[in-house]
Image 1 (cartoon, chains in turn orange, blue):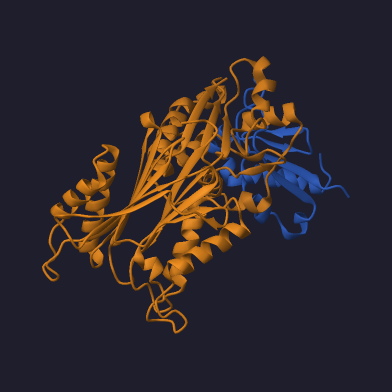
Image 2 (cartoon, rainbow over the protein chains, first blue to last red):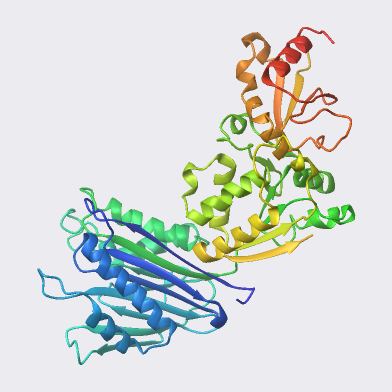
Length: 395
Length: 87
C-alpha cells in the first residue's frame, strides 16, 4: 500500500433486543496485490438466525464477486437467486451496500435496498460523480444503485442498515419517521466538527450507539454502521528487546521518537536503554502496581508513550489478538497495548535480537516464547484479524 | 525525615521468580510505617546478569542496598529495621 495513505474500514453493530443472532452482517477484505479495499454490509429479511443466515450469505458472496470483478447486476442476481426463500413471506431477500476502493482511484458504492450512503469531506456532504440505478430483468422489483465517488484523502464514507435510519420510529413523537438518513448525516457532521480526526471505529460506534439511544424501549431492529476513512496512517512503534550490538543502542532508542505517533516499549532492559539514551524516566503508579492483573505493571515514559514488561506481556497480547478478545478484561498492561494497537493503522515492531541471559535461569517456571516468533505471530494476527499494516525491523 | 525508598524489579525473570508477590507489599506494612516508606515498581533494575548476586527477584533499598531472592517477609522485615534505624 502507498505508505502515505491508509484506509481505515470499521463497523459497529447492535442486535435486535431478544434475538440471539444479528440479522445484519458486515465483512471487510483487503486485496493486497491490487491495493484494493472492499467492505460489504447486508441486512437479512426479518431478524434473528434466519436473517443472520441471509445476511452472511449475501456479504460473503458479494465480497467474493466484488473481488473477482463480476458485474454488479449479475452478482446481485446470483445472490438473489441463491438465497433461501422465507416460508412466511415467500421471498428470499437481503439488502446490501458494497464499497470498493482502489488506492489512488475512485470508490464505487453499490446499494440494493439499504439507506443511501453518506460521503463526507470534513463536514460537507459530497455528491457522487456518477449515480445510476439499474433494474434486474430477472427481479423487476429490485433496484440496484451504482455510484462512483471521488474519494479523497480525509474523506469518509458511511453506510448503514435501516435499523439506524429508522431508529426511534414509532417510539418517539419527535421522530415520526425515525432518525432518517438526514438525522444520521447531521449527527455525523456534528461528530466530525467536534473531532475532525475521529477514527472510522469511533464514528461507526458513535452512530450505532446514538441509534440505540433513540430506541428507549430496546433495539427494535438490528443496527449496523460501517465507516471507511482515508487518511495519513497513524503510526505506532513497538520497541522490544536490546539490540544485538551495544553500540547500536543510541540509534535504537531514537526509533522511539522518529516519525511516530505513539511508542510502546516492551521489556525492562529495553526501557533501561531508553532511559539512558534519551534521558527519560519510566513512572509506575502505585495503583497500577496493585491492579496489574497477574502481569508486571505498565508505566509511562514522558514524551515517548508507555513501558511494559516484555515477553510475558507480549505473549498475552498475542493470544488476545489471535482470539480477537476485547481489551477490557485483559490485565492493565495488555489492555493498554491492545487499545493503542486498535487506535493506530500501522504498527512497526523494532526488535532487538540479543538473548536475555536471565531468561535461561533454570528456576524460571514457564516456557518463554522467543521474542521473534511472538512478534511474527502478532504481525500475522494484526494483518489478518484487524487489517493493520505491519512492519518488522531487527536491531 | 526522608522516606525509605524501596524499588521492586518487575523484569520478566524477577516477576516470574516471585516479584508478583511483592506488588501489594505496602498493604502488608504496619499502619504507622506506611507514611515513612516510598515503594516503587521498576521496569528492570538490571541486576540479574551480575554474577556476584544470588538471583531474582531483586529489591533495592535507598538506591544502593540490594536484596536478592526477595520475599515479602524479608522485604518487610528489612523495611521495619530501616524504619527503626537499624543497619
